[in-house]
Image 1: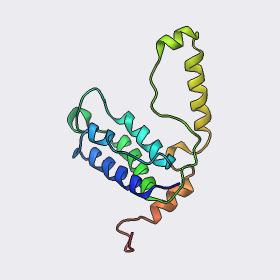
Image 2 (image 1 turned 30 degrees about the vertical axis):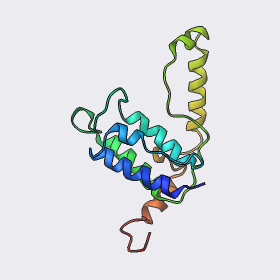
Image 3 (image 1 turned 90 degrees about the vertical axis):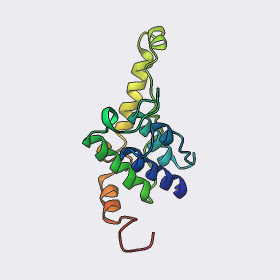
Image 4 (image 1 turned 180 degrees about the vertical axis):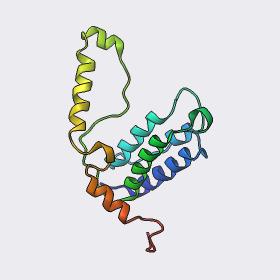
Length: 151
């Protein structure tokens, strides 16, 4: 299911964060509809962009390098598209749980790695959150804004 208001709100917030106009806390406070798996996945992935221990903007030492900005561009193109999110369920919010890893003799981290490996085989990760390059190329060739047609 596509939740257009959630996708639009998140796309705007990502653009504002990358350009240094809002803080990491502002980006984190964006609510997305839980039924839109794509918006939820992008929001979880965005969590990896910043240090959530304190409030900051993506400027100076927190400035995002070109590869990260290009990847976020894919996310924004996806959010503006009407493409369904078809990747399997996977949470990008991962922490190293060393006590559990120690108690399970490494099984916990191996399980996490196995789930990530399975996730990576489900599509072409270079164009994530699109599953296929063709979907990405189609979305790029039919932009929602500045296309001369009403959105």
